[in-house]
Length: 443
Image 1: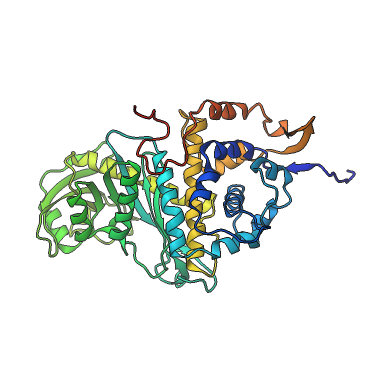
Image 2: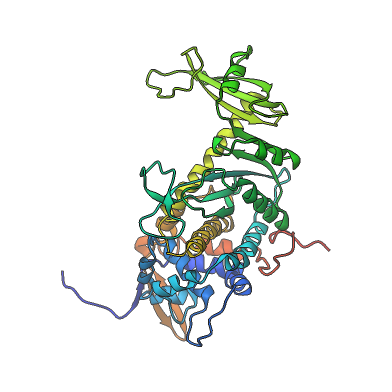
């Protein structure tokens, strides 16, 4: 094989032209520019909204560290797709995030979340809010990186973020980056107040709530009951709960052999009796769980709820909460949300929230281009849509991007462009309007 070189602008990510068209259609750059919390004084500085867009594109094509963003600096075809005259490097991206403090995060991401939530399709019966936390192991001396609960690396230092997801739309409603020594329910009420405030400001109704036992507590239950939110939360199996289980006399058998029952009672210092729904299944010989009743035949799971549905339907509803585990896996494995860390805590948080924003953009991108198809994981989108060899050329006075037919060429992506062209263009700056951008404005 003879080796040679070419001066043509070649890119392995020609499929990002579809995503670039999508960002232009929704007015992404204009929204960022309107709410960006600081500006650069140097006339030679690259606009920060362009720097953030390049960072998101680097994450989208597989970057796991800030240094990996440097691979886009030589991609002149991608620069043309994004309308960039100059491409920032990894140092410029780090410098941008290092300028973020708490005030800058509030100034940018709070209106950005509202804007994204306004684009979520409305539901007459409201949305289900799922919250969960995850552990991000860190290596270094970054702010907030301390020893805490870390099942993957015992004794290791970490961050412990929490996110809230609207289950039916797969949209990340809100997120916090927290220090590694926090527990799952640390600051949960403050976090939920912000979640519900963002939802209310954007006209999104939240009517249901689900969480695991890490968030089980009387203060949270009382807070949800005051707002008439239907909740389902896994309960801790204390001695009082186990004694109530022993008093259950009626068990409903399910198709898979499990059985469900319920009781109403108080635990601990509760002054109010609440409904508990119990699922029991025959104990396997290799089951390592030790929190059993005196009879060794069953293992138990208990939830507390203020819902009125049958016990079987309550468990079916809670089992759908497993989707948030998939969202966390996609964020960490496909978009590498655990891979970008700075010495500054707020700089790291700004990068983390930016990746959550990218996840929402990908969700809406799929709603716009394939409305009836199931949503695909970010890694699947990368391999099937965004990765495509292409060459930047010219035809007369116009730039032309030539897609490689070996990756499906332009023909396989024409339906995506057609869907974007037929998609009703939203009005991006209307951040204070409760009208969804895909709805007609009332007279």
